[in-house]
Length: 588
Image 1: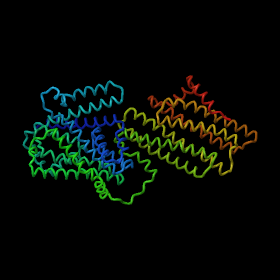
Image 2 (image 1 turned 180 degrees about the vertical axis):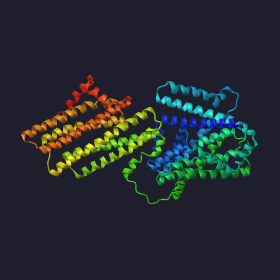
Image 3 (image 1 turned 30 degrees about the horizontal axis):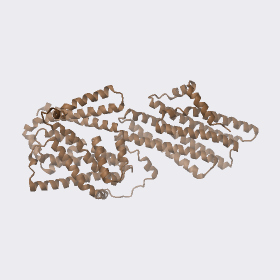
Image 4 (image 1 turned 135 degrees about the horizontal axis):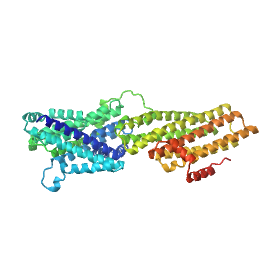
């Protein structure tokens, strides 16, 4: 094997690993975070957990990715440790799907239809279809499907390139000698563990082993312990991801390690005991890619069947390893923010869904802070003041933590739809934060009235109630527009914002009339002005939210131009909506 053959080998390995990465990313994008949401909503049924873990991993082609997600779920409190055990077992079964796909490279037949199943036959077809999808179709989902097909084709070409490069090694005595050394179970397990730990993927390391099998120099006696080691090596990714996590997340990573260590011990102990008694003839036969797939599946399925009834014991073993120590108690509020788990950033589609959930929570808090503050104007209560302050503080924290999380997420590979959603959230969370600030301003005005023992006149209060109702309605509309990304509903915000401005001016004009008549005081006028100004600005922020959703979905960000067109050159429907809103909010 000369220098150029070695270059070809490493080139094939690079193509193989890159193809697996591209295919996995494409599958994750097409799933749009739905697979992770299925895991998130998992029941405590162990059998269902295993099936879901296997299904999700078979689709995203990575047990490491599934396990890292599970560590994130446990760390954020979304999933219990007992639920995680079944998913981890299932992930080990699901990862064997890749080895079955790669085993197609070993098909040998002159039959036309069977030859079509060989990667060298269908990979070029998939590559051509994939490039058409990527270059000529506009749909983001179809482009992602194209990426999956291209990734699969590159993976298969890499597999074929590696197989071709290592074939001459069958005639090299030194290579045969090294390979034979791995028939020692301990050496084989260590080699498989190290290889998988380095490349961080058991699917990829099994693929490399299958490529080596094409030389005919790798016997089943060599392949078996290496496969066992590969299952242990894949635990490294989860163990690394658990660094800095809470104790239960670390326990989830330890469950993954113990499952593979104990499973390997039981499987190898039982297998070699039977081999010593019956002397399996196939052990000295040359391993095939299909045979590797069979061994890989047999181990993981057997280990799961044997250990699933003892899942509680695995859980206890992990708890004994990661002992309970005195930890700072996590408050309910802190738990609420833990959905913005940094480990989810490796799955951008799911991280986007978690960000949307956090943004909705933020919008609700801002929404509730305003309603509570408005009630205080007429019916003052000290606990209401405290609630407004707490909600405003929480909204401030959401803006800080969610904004930071979204900036990190913006550097990931997002779909066009998710990219639009991220831009919309970054624009809108500032408006929700400002709405909560104005709620505090209104609360302070109510507090001032209470401390001074003054109240609005019955007439002034009735007028203010009309304005408050209009503002409550525009905030409700803005909340729905934001959560549902409803462009049609967004169009109804601007006429209402215009009417709120008119109502505010009319309230101030009427106050001046009462002031001249001596039926009101300058002091109350200042308070009324503060409240109406805050309500006007809240309506402005709602307008910003409506415009932002519309503009982001239309791929345009010129908010001022959009508002200028709507207000200075509106169409007939705007005038019609404006008149309808004016009739709805009439001052008494």
